[in-house]
Length: 224
Image 1 (cartoon, rainbow, N blue to C red):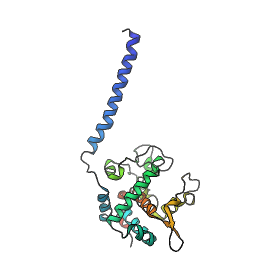
Image 2: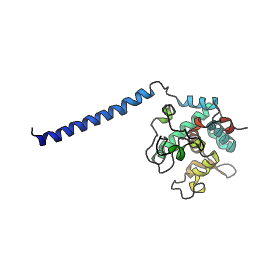
Image 3: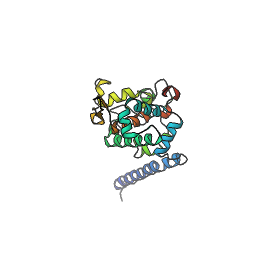
């Protein structure tokens, strides 16, 4: 084999070697980082939200108070089981609607992302491994596109009233937004008011759960 023939062969072997090495690292590194972090079920997340009285729990109570007819119809009472159900339904429709196509769920330690997507007034809100070790990150919803903002700290950015209006018609809260409205997540109650339906309450609960574990102090968010 001449010199000119050996060079492409060496480049090919080196390329394959780097590809296999990168593939191994992408598989092995998470195994080492996450091996000591327990995987949480949705029921664990619901129990944690109630025990710590997080902002997500308070927002779930607000939904029950604002829309008692629909909440009672679809979720019954405010408790861990109904919160778990809402998280599962919200997560299902978040994935089904392809929300992850436009919204990421990871604040990276670069480009001042904590200022753009973090908790207002809090500098160190970069994402960390343990907040992704749960059933609601299967499949992983880190995302790569940011047509819309990152949502992993959404609980601290907007309140539930804003979320309801934004979900129905984003232009009412964000003029110029290219996000479509989702009126099929709403229905009319017995008085003719437009209110969230089962899917709407679930999706609102899920979105307001994102980052609620980082909202401190939690008592300010609790219902009186």
